[in-house]
Image 1 (tube, rainbow, N blue to C red):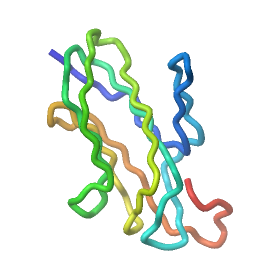
Image 2 (image 1 turned 135 degrees about the vertical axis):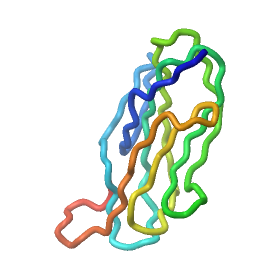
Image 3 (image 1 turned 120 degrees about the horizontal axis):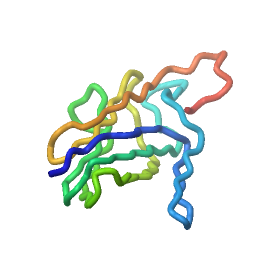
Image 4 (image 1 turned 45 degrees about the vertical axis):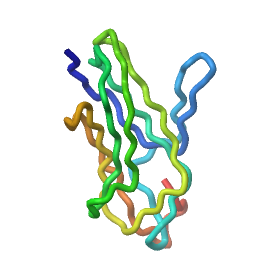
Length: 134
């Protein structure tokens, strides 16, 4: 029986996968700044790493704000055979529009059970901020 454990949830400007299978996580962040809302975010990614999967399981990833409708909702299947093996999900997103500033939860569920979550913050950029984005 699988006992999945989230080892990492990292937000970054970009997640790359090399030909040898290694992942590159470029420009980590936890807050996206925008001068106004709704805001169309720059391309960004999330790196997810999970252990403890020892069979075929259904998973879902979602990004939710205050609205009950998620901004992102992905479903799929993971197949693990070794509880210690790391399953990596390098994901990149474009054209995600955030309706308002605040906290957005990136949730990971396996077989309908929440196994991990990470908050992404969206904030209004002030004049002193030298960088707009993450």
